[in-house]
Length: 467
Ligand code: ARG
Picture 1 (cartoon, protein in one colour):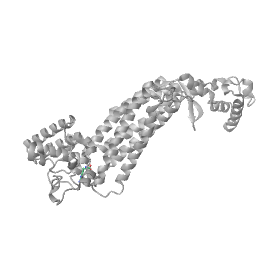
Picture 2 (picture 1 turned 90 degrees about the vertical axis):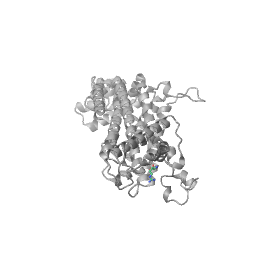
Picture 3 (picture 1 turned 180 degrees about the horizontal axis):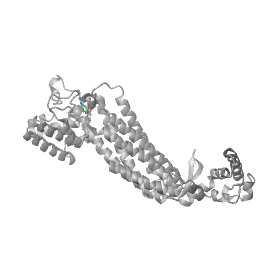
Picture 4 (picture 1 turned 135 degrees about the vertical axis):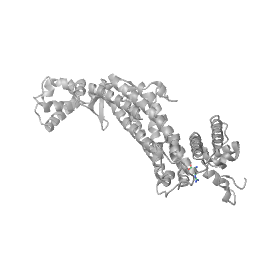
């Protein structure tokens, strides 16, 4: 190994880097994923340097041409990544110098890897956020469409996982959709803070060259240059915010997954998932397993882990850049990949859910799910709610003993508990009557579900236009 293993800082060293330390400190094996953003940032930097007269136009052109060729080499898989060159930034710069000679060494004028890497990650995150934004929109769209279709489908609603009151399947799907709408807002809000440009902060204090940070910000599509150079190279709040968005999103997807898993079981038997989203068992021929929702549920753990890693990474870090920050990339990359995969799985799968309407209806019928409706009926006839609760409780106890749902009892049987009850009671004891009666904004009535779906569609459209 040559005296200076790493030409970019070899000058002040009297012995080569220890071979293990070189490997230990290198990030190229994972940060090469930032190559596209690194080149994009370097082209903008060189363009700005020429505009303010620090580089000649010829130097700028040579740099841009060289970087463009390197981009091609990387895309074609021809680029040779070198671990002794430590990271993506120095690999690309070394190759540029190899290609265009001394001019390549001028690219780093007025810049440091500290502001360079912070810029690269923000560019990467901005692209990632935009892809996630589209997948989330596709999922919401599919959910709203299914909800509209299933506005009249009756299923049991649960609290404590015990049958509570009948609801419509469309209403349940729109509850999921609300969770995702909030995630979508959080994502867009995070994007605002991602889209601020650290470039120009240099190592930590700024640079003595007459740079124009508004030019680079505009070339790179950032909303503005970061205000403070110390903060610009050290801030990773945006990474933590993204990981917290991702954690909340995965928490939501895990809840939906859990319900899908339960619903496909023989015990619930509420839905079917098409075979393409399931796998079989190598030993039990009868099995069809809901692997996709199970895996999404399982992947929630790693995303929570990334949030914890990033929070802990930043805890107590003194200003400004510290090498610790090199550890931000793997959790972020994995969080992005996991979110994109899980959203794709859901966006493909949700529209293909096949509700088993009869089975859902039967389940709602079995669990005394109209008991509250009977209590409300008594209240409308002048009984105090607490007394009504007691009367219905006795009716349910009777039903349990006789194995009869409330709607299956005769008027005489019901009258044992209150002679206020008349034949009109059977209208409120039907499941259709029960859901239709909850007819206000946010309620489960089919007409409300249709109205809510159309508002959800408007909100999604507004989200797309706000971007
Ligand atoms: N690979 C480094 C990182 O990911 C780049 C910045 C290194 N800066 C430094 N002064 N060593 O954070």
